[in-house]
Length: 76
Image 1 (cartoon, helix red, strand yellow):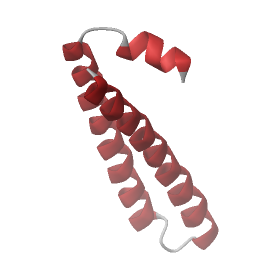
Image 2 (cartoon, helix red, strand yellow; image 1 turned 90 degrees about the horizontal axis):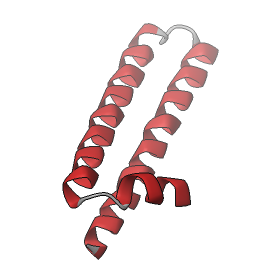
Image 3 (cartoon, helix red, strand yellow; image 1 turned 180 degrees about the horizontal axis):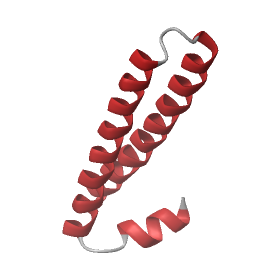
């Protein structure tokens, strides 16, 4: 986390807001990809579970990074 806070959050407030917006758009894209994969892989139960769980955990990881940035922005 120190690398993240050093590279993203010690910049300007505008830069932090830009990164937050970018992360949120990536998160939405990953969730849309998970939704698409769910409809494609609906008949392959093992592939569906693996792909959907993997994409969902990526989206949750992005969400936690975004929440970390939001908390840091409140400090400003």
